[in-house]
Structures are given as structure tokens and as C-alpha cells.
Image (cartoon, rainbow over all chains, first blue to last red; front, top):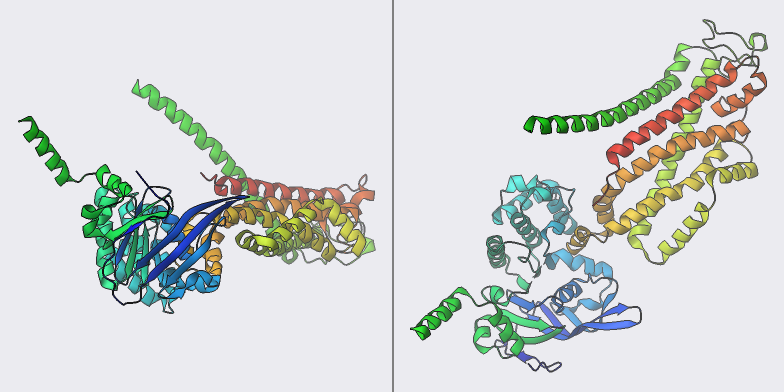
Length: 292
Length: 288
């Protein structure tokens, strides 16, 4: 298993001359622990185009969530971007002052957290929080904001009035995650970052969440950065898949070609780790025919 | 077997309920005493139409009568009216001092906890420095230095007590701001002010109320004690502590001059402590 440092296999889709929504160029993120410096993300470069679903896959600790936090500008204090550029619609947002960066969050970049419980403040009703999010980015009256919030909750397939009046602890995980997605999409950002949105949910709820993501993406035509640890799971939903390990991008390819053309041994390992039902069936059949 | 178990649980639950209701009964007692005192402060002057300040040497040290419900003091002033006026003074100044302490301490704690950085470090060192002085000594030094008066007393109380609130608020804000829901609010683009106001402020209300309930009794005692020593309310101001001091020479002959103000101070402080116990019971949530 040769993982030569810095070597990544890229097979990209044909280049179309539209300005990419997100472009990471040679990004290095480093963790400071006193005198100790540790590189969490090494030389990461990727491009996400408008309307594209880009899946970033990797095991825990591969640096995918750190990358997402860096794009948002919400890295914890001891982490910082040491080299490289983060370009949002062509603009280098890494150099922006914090105030301008804050304006981008929510309105240009949406974020859905892995832990649905923490997406909302536990002691404020959901409706109030949705209104607050809307009104901090757009100037509209409370009535208009309430109307918009109810509409989006409806879109998310939730009982709008009930969810509007509920506290976060009164809803199930799947409902909360869908509400969080609706809340992020409400502002129609150019890029939505979904950080392992289904990891904490059961399979059915997770599927519903991803279906909703696809539906809302079709509606708002935004780009999606889908972060996950399950390669097979995202291959069905994504346009482009990139595999990360130890902070480096190992392989990047179109989702439909990934299974066939996976070159890097780590990618192959991920694919083989969880065969789908059809493959299991085939393996079973081949064992049966071998015994016969 | 089942009846035995239900019998046991019923008695245990019953015992728990009794002790909790006993505590809440004490709180009710505290609230009623304080309510009576506050009522005294407002209704008293309307019931008894004697001026608490008029000196009338021909009527000094009289026994209780219809005109003077609990008699007169050594200068002929009605004791009841002086008690009522003193309630206004003592309770009013204590409430004012507490309000000022909260108005200064809470925003400083919020800002310190949220912003962190150099300003926070400097302020915390200042808070530690002020906190090193015991409040009683500070109050004595302050009023001794600036001259004894109720205003200076109030200022010295405010100066020392705001740091308790700043510290409590700061520690809560520091722990809450790291929580994920605050991060979620920031990721959605909320401004710092919105986050402090809507997401962090509700967390500090309960602990601050518990602290305030504890402090009010302490502040009332400081005011009364320093007035007794002569560093607070000056004559002829009808402050309870000062009245205690005035009654000292007459303790042998007319003990009521000391007993009534002393009783008033004691009742108010006890009731404040009882209320603070009840408040702590209901609001002091132990977080997970």
C-alpha cells in the first residue's frame, strides 16, 4: 500500500468555463500546541462548481471537518490556515476581516452540523430561531419572516405549525436535521456545507435527509459540499467524490466512474469495506456455484 | 408483597414531599415578613401622622399610646414613624445598591466572557485586586476617607460587590460560548450582540437571581452595621442602624429604643435569607 506523500490521482470532468463557487488552492491547516506544530491538512486543492454536489470522504481524523470549518472561518483558536487560498466565487475570503466574513456565513455559505441537537439553541423555540436567522441577513418584518420559515419547513416535509412552535427537544433526530437543513437553505446560499449530516441518524432518517438535500438543491441551485465517512453512501448522491486521508487528498473522480476507476489502494479499501446488496448477492451466488 | 412495596415508596415519597413543602413554607414565611416590612415602609406614614424628624423634647421617652403606637425616642420623635421611614431608607438604599451592582457587573462579565483576549485579562486582574479586599473593611475605609454619609456608604458597597456578579457571569459565558449551539448561531451569521443577547443572556438569569437573593441580606446588614458605628446614616436620618446607636445610652431604662430597630433589622435579614434559600432551591439547577 504505497501512499506516496503528496501524490494524488485526479481524473476530472471536462473543464467548463464557469466561475467555481469554491476553490481551495494548496491549503495547509496547522494545529499549535505550545511549541508543537502539527499539520492537519496538507496541500489540499479542490474546485466546486455551481450546482455541483461535491463529496469529501475520509475516515475520522482525515481533516475533512477541519477543512469545512476553515472555509466558514470558524476554526478553533489553536488551528490556523498557514498557507494557501480559499476562494469563494473568485474572492479570497481567507484574507477578509472577521466582520466581512461573518456576513458571508449563512447568506453565502450555509452549514449543516453532524449533531442535530446542537444546531439549535435548546431553550428557544425553533420558530423564533428561524426568524432570527432570517432577519439577521434580510430586512423583513416578523410576519414575512414567519411566513417564509413556515414555507421552508413545509418544503422539508415537516408539520410546519407544530415544528414552528416546538423546542428542539420535542422533535426527533430526523426532524431536527431536516429543520436544520431547511434553516440553512432558507437563506439560499451559494454553497451548502453538510458535515456528516446523516452519521448520527438511522438509515431511513438519513435517506430522508439526503433526499431533502437533493430536493432543496434542485430548488435553490446551490453547490453542496457533502462531507461523509461512507464512500458508498455518497457515491449515489454526489457528482464528484474526493477521498481524504491524513489531511491529504488521495483521489478525486466523478462519482459514476469512482467504483470502476478507483486507482488508489486506500480508495479500493474503502470500497471493499462495505459491499452493497447486489455485490453480496453476486458473491453468494459465486460461492454457491463454486460449491455445486 | 406489592402492598409492602407501595407502602414503602409512598412513605418515602411522602417524606420527600414533606421536607420540600417545609422548605417552601419557610420561604413563604420569609416572603410574608418582607412584604409586611415593605408595606410598613409605604403605609406606615399614612397610618400614623407623626413626623419622624420633628424634635419634641416635652414628649421624650413616652410609653406606647394611641398617638405614638410604640412610644417616642429620646428626642420626642415617634418611634413607629421613624421605623417606617427607616424601612424606606434601609431597604431603598439596599435595593438601589443591588441594582447598581448588577447594572455594572453583568455587562462587564458578559463582555469579558465573550470577547476574551487582552481586555479580559486586564479586567480580571482588576477584579481580583478589588476582590482581595473584604467588603466591610473597604466600606469603613471608604466612608472614613470620604466622610460618613449614606451616599458614600452606597458607593463603597457598589464598588466592592460588582465583582461577584462579573465573575459569575463571566464563568457561565465562558463555558456556554464553547457549546455547539453557539457555534451553530455563529455559522448562521448571527452578530456577537445577537448571540450574547438571545443565546447567552438567558443562561445567566438564574444564577444571578440566586446571587442577588443572597446579597440583599448582606447589603442590608452592612448598611445597618456601619450606620450603627456612625459611618452611614447621620442624625437626624431615621436609619435603623443609627437608631440602634441612638438607643444605646437608654438601654437600661427604655430598652424599646434598641429593641424595635434591632428586631426590624433581624426580621428583614432573616426573611431575605429564607427567600434566598427558596430561590436557590428552585433556580439553582445543577447542570449535567
